[in-house]
Image 1 (tube, rainbow, N blue to C red):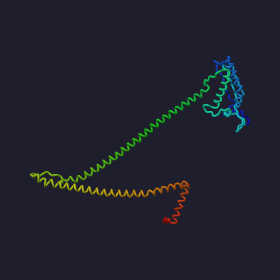
Image 2: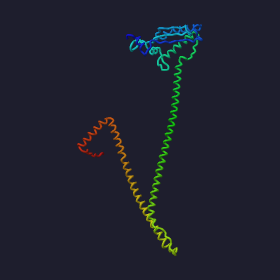
Image 3: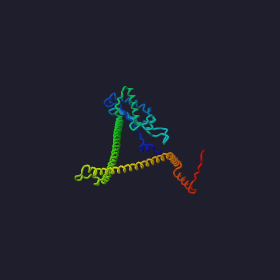
Length: 340
């Protein structure tokens, strides 16, 4: 590689160098001009002396302790690198792998390897502060963005949980509506069935009424009406000559109606007996055919298995070949063999 520096400078994967800035306190309690400010500078210097040994994969090329501002603070500029790389150059720039070599791996979007390493360095600085009697009050301002992200994430989780609960409620309501719809449909079907039965009964009643009306006209003949008694006709004579003959005619009519009724009833019973006999015969035939049907279903399953194994094309070829042989030879003869 002709110019590795230019490659890193122009590339987007790595930076030329990285910087960390550390400060103890603020201008109210660690002013640069105060005694505490001098103590802060001493602590920062002590921290810096061990930085390179603690981070061998972070090559420091610049470290400045600024005392000309309100509070002492330390700038450390370094290049992260690894050695023994199996791809490309043996020694090359890589922040992620340099931090991994220091033990900071498995970073996430909200808690990267870099943020883990920064927290670790703050812990090292706090230990140097403790050696000089300075207690670290963790305000958490540097992780504020992480707290906000976690808060938003927790809020999203709560919202999702609430939505899941709402979905369950709605699913329950939908299930209840489906049940109601099914019940309503069942009731409607029952009502329609009852209506059909009622309509059938009404139709039968209307047919009977038409039949009665049609046949009743036959008996509207005046000969079936009881005439008025003639003048000077005695009650006995009216009874014997008029009423009794009419009653005899009506009895004959009733006998004829009953006779036709019994004849039709007998015919219907005979037809019903024949129908029941046919039903029993057909039921016996169906029952007798059940073993054969079961055998044929087994043959069909075997045929499907054969198609699955050999394939539709091969099976069709075999079937066609068998048909051609039968056509050429004629119907195959079935030889009866007795089994003892």
